[in-house]
Amino acid sequence: MPDVIPNDSVGLVTPQIQHFDEPLTLRSGRVLEKYDLIYETYGELNADRSNAVLICHALSGDHHAAGYHSMDDKKPGWWETCIGPGKPIDTNRFFVVSLNNLGGCAGSTGPTSTNPETGKPYGPEFPIVAVRDWVNSQARLADVLGIDVWAAVIGGSLGGMQVLRWSIQFPERLKHAVVIASAPKLSAQNIAFNEVARQAIAKDPDFHDGWYQEKNTLPKAGLMQARMLGHLTYLSDDAMRQKFGRELREGKLNYSFAPEFQVESYLHYQGEKFSTRFDANTYMLMTKALDYFDPARDHDNDLRKCLSQAQCRFLVMSFTTDWRFAPARSEEIVNALIHADKEVSYACIESDNGHDAFLLPIPRYLDIFQAYMDGVAERSFEGATA
Amino acid sequence: MSELRQDLAIIQKWVRPNSEILDLGCGQGELLSYLKREKNVHGYGLEINPEKITACIRNGVNVIEQNLDNGLGNFEDQSIDTVIMTQALQAVKRPDELLDEMLRIGKEAIVTFPNFGYWKTRFYLLLKGRMPMSDTLPYNWYDTPNIHMCTFRDFEILCHEKGIRILNKTVVDDQHREHWSIGLWPAMLGEIAVYHITRK
Image (cartoon, rainbow over all chains, first blue to last red; front, side, top):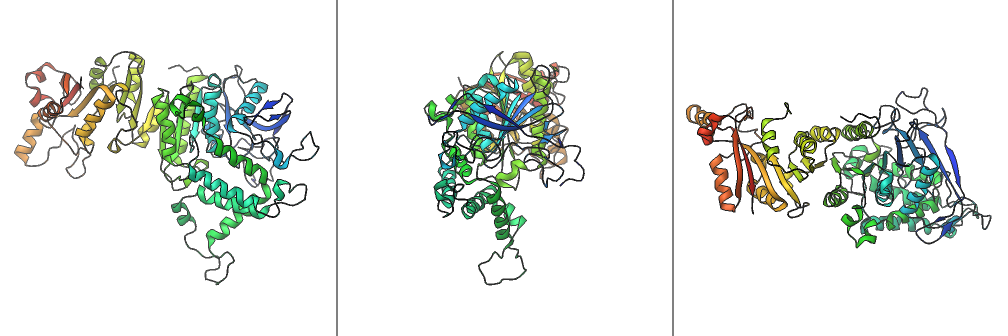
C-alpha cells in the first residue's frame, strides 16, 4: 500500500467495463454472442485521437497495467515500470488503453462468467480463443473508444504475439508495433512446458474436468504446480543463483521433504499466491492460445510473406538470458521484417533476469523504449516534423 | 550538411536515389539519416554499441543490434543495392571474409579505412621504432580495436585476388577533406581511403 502515490505513477485508476452485443465469430468457428471487456485507460486522448497506445498483456496479465485501484493496494499494476508520467509509455503524451483479454479471469468474459445459454458458469465450455480473436475484440474496443489508428500497439511475450497479429490483421490501424521478448510461434519445447502445466491442472482431483466452480472446489495444487513450472522458465539460471543460491531457510539441513532451500519456498509462495488469484480454466485457455499462435501458417509457413502485409514501424527487443523466448526467436521476427523491407529496429538487452526482464527496470531497456516512444510522439502526432 | 563528415559526403555521391542501403557499424545513424533525407534511400544500420543503438532509435534510424564478427548470414544474396562500412574494416576479425559477405549481400559496396601507409605512420615506425599513433589511430598496440591495419596497396591487392572491381576510389586527410595535394601521391599522403567496389 503506497502511503503516497509516486509522482511517476498514473495514480488511482478505475477499470471500466464495455459490453458488446454484436456476436464475435472465433477462429475455432464458435461464436460468442455477447461479451464484456474490462479495461483501464491512462492519460488523455488528444483532439484528433492520434495519441492512443494499446497494451497487450501476457499469459497471466490483465487490464491493470499501471497505477493503483485503492490506497490499500500492496502493488501497482503489472507494468508500472514502463507506464506513467515521464516513463517510456509516457502518460503525459499518450492515451493508454489496457484490457483483460477474452477468456481471462479479471473481469472480461471468460470461463468464470455465466454462459447465457445455460445460466451456469462457462467453465471448460468457454470456447478456445486464439490470438486473432483477441485482436478482433481489441479492435472492437478501439471502435467504441473512437480510435481509428493506434499510435502504437505494445506487448511482451504473449502480448508481443498480439502485436504481431495486429500488424497483419489491421495493418492500417497502427503506426508502430513494439514486440518485446516474444516469438513468431512457440517451439516444441515451449509447447511441452505448457502441456506439463495443463496436465498438472487437469490431473488435480479438484479440477473435475473444469467444473470445479460447480463443485465449489478449486484445483489449487494443480494450478500451483503449473505456476511453479512456468515461473522456473521465466527466470534464468544466473538469476536464480544470485537470488537464492543454495541458501537454506533455517540455515541447516533438516533431512525432511518440507521446503528447505530458499528457492523452494519462493516457488511455493509464488505458486500459492497464483493459485488463489488465477482461474485454472483461463490458464488452460491462455496456454492454448500460445501454442496455436503461428501467423506464418496461413502464408506457406513463410514469415516474410506473412509480415509483408504490415505497414507499421517495428521495435523488437529481446533479453540475453531469456530462454523461454530466446533472442534468436526475436531475431526470426527481425529477419523476416528485413527481408520484407519493413522499418524495424532491434536491440538485444543484456540482463540476468531471463524472460521476466521485460517487466523489470533495466536501464538500457528503458532508455531504448523511451527513445523509441519519444520518436513515436514527436514524429507522429506532436507535429515536430524535423 | 556542414556537420556531415567529409567521407560521408563523398560516399553519398556514390549512392543512388531510392536505393536499399546496409550500413555496417552505423554509429548514431548519421549517414543513414542523411541518405534518407537527401536520397530517399531505405536501409538498415548494424551496430553493437548500446549508446549508439539508442541514439539511432532516437534519430528514427532503423538499427539492428548485430556483431559483424558473427557474420551476416541473415541477409540474403544481392538483396541490398549498396553495403557501406566506414572505418570498421580494420576492426573486424576477418576483413577478407567480411568483404566477401558485403559483396554477396550487396550489388555494390563502399568501404573506408585508415591508410597504414600514410607518410606520418611510416615515419613514426621508422624513426621511433614504435607502433604508430595519431589522431586517426589514437590507440596503443595492446588496446587498439584496429587489429587488421592495411595500406591502400594491401587493400587493392586483396581486391585483385578476390576478383573485386574498384569502381571509384578517393583519399582524404584526417579531417576527411579531399585535397589536390593528396592526389599527387595518395598512397603516401592520404590518411583515409574511400573505395567503391563491386564484383560485377
